[in-house]
Image 1 (tube, rainbow, N blue to C red):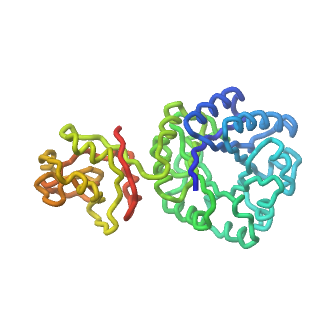
Image 2: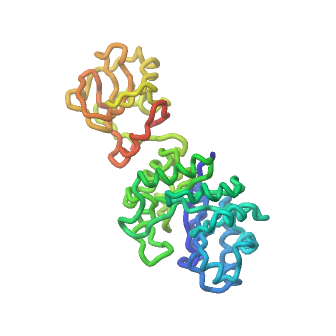
Image 3: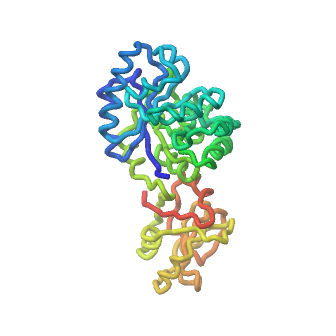
Amino acid sequence: MKRQLGVSVYPDHSDLNQDKAYLKKASECGFSRIFMSMLEVTEGKEAVKAKFQELISYAKSLGFETILDVAPNIFDELQISYDDMTFFHEVGADGIRLDVGFDGNKEAMLTFNPFDLAVELNMSNDVAYLDNILTYQANKPFLYGCHNFYPQEGTALPYDFFESCSIRFKKEGLRTAAFVSSQVGTVGPWDVNDGLPTLEAHRHLAVDVAAKHLFATGLIDDVIIGNAYASDEELEAMGALNRYQTELTIEFVEGVNEVEKAIVLNEQHFRRGDITHQVVRSTEVRKKYKNEANLPHDCQDEFQVGDVVIGNQTFGKYKNELQIVLEQHADIRKNKVGQVVDAEKLLLPFIKPWTKFKFSVK
């Protein structure tokens, strides 16, 4: 399934022209999805329709897919019904996100709406909600899942709960999404905004690192920046991500040589299938570089978790094998060539047997 990057906009808390400029920059950086909140509308049906139509029409011209976040009070405010999706079709939305659920049958029926609008479910509940909807034979291609975000410090999901919730949706083959938080964005749906992540561990993490983590789990298809406005630098960093395999950022040691740099940066790595707890082993590279000399350097100290090491020429057949250290150990037959940056060490547990990975330089 194609993986998308998304941004969020809050038309009832922002300026239309500023929203448009933000979407244009995001589009240039490869973003293609919008989470657009309708939870705070108070202006009446026609005014709301005109405002959202203009912004969504502009977003469509840039190639964006737009999902509107809705709640029951919005239907009362706009005097519309869940049984008639005409209003959302008329404003140009590609789908609606149900902040509150129904009885299962209602959600299933909504996926057969005549406008082919997607119906996105709240993923942040580890209950049989989705199973119930699917027993009513929902139209699965039009059924999405998206986690919540959490504006209050300390209230976002722990990883194990996030994983359990996400597996329910991913095992059914549904499109899934989750939020990361800009470190400079101040706009959200509520008056409290300590960031808008899905995972508490991501609240103060750079958006690109948090996105790498979500993609590395294999449970999330689309990563959305929850708060607005992310900086140009954040958008560019996220847009430059490799969405389909983990790319670790390495800081090289001063003693690294050109052969070692080539091994690290120019090759497609994968973890050996017969794994060890001590290191991630990328063994194919030693065959390609078996005739390249590699003198010992930076090999006297104990290696730490996240260090990247390469076998030196005292290591026999293992010369020029690349490893990522998972447990502290010492071995003078290995040269330390660099280390995975601290913020990205949370990615190491997701390098499983046969996982493909690459490196980039900080």
